[in-house]
Image (cartoon, rainbow, N blue to C red; front, side, top):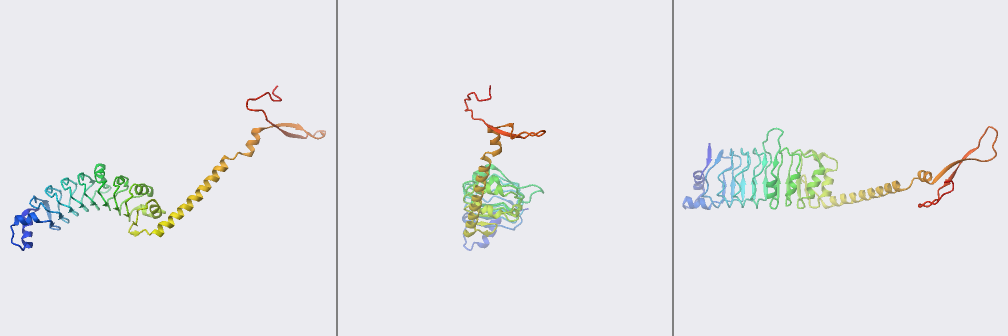
Length: 311
């Protein structure tokens, strides 16, 4: 088992520290540590590195996020491609701006409350059991609503992202290679994300739906890039004009239908205001009756006086 300890840091520091200063003083000054791809299993006590702002620990064997409560000045934390199954012990990192957790075993985005300056969260390609998908704790999303700007949730078997509407300051959403299916759900989400200018959904079934791109461009005025392709103003204007023309034709059709359905039927109107009275006309011939019908128009007022024939 390889542990990330102060001694290991000190050995690296000795190689870089050309000034012959006390190792303790040097550790206190360190702002960046890179121990990526070092087969590290455990993060040990690094509390002397109080000024640490960037920590690279990707491509290791770390299974638990631990012993980082000292790093109150940390702004960037790289933990992708480890063996982490749970987001934990990060609440003290109040200056953290970027968190990289891709390629782990995390099933739920949670326990990020208190990270009020977190701008980027990268949690793509979690190695989940077959059939499971990445979930979001609503409390965590609510806590990130004011700060989170960039979210990468690609390749996590996600089939709906309605919960992300809480992230009203989101500017970039990367969700490629998931299972998103319904354009309507995306339209509803875009209505709630007025600052989103980049969205990449390549590899989702929804991308194959008719008018997928057109509908999303029309629903979002802020979107500038969709699935890696720039949205040009001439494209948006063309779609807006097309939609306005289509809506105008639809309104005319609806008005015509309304006029047709509200117009009185001549047959029913005639039958409701006329009585048909049988009678004979002309000179009757032997064995032949010339029969016709005369209409008797009702002209009685609503308060009904006595009409002829009522007696």
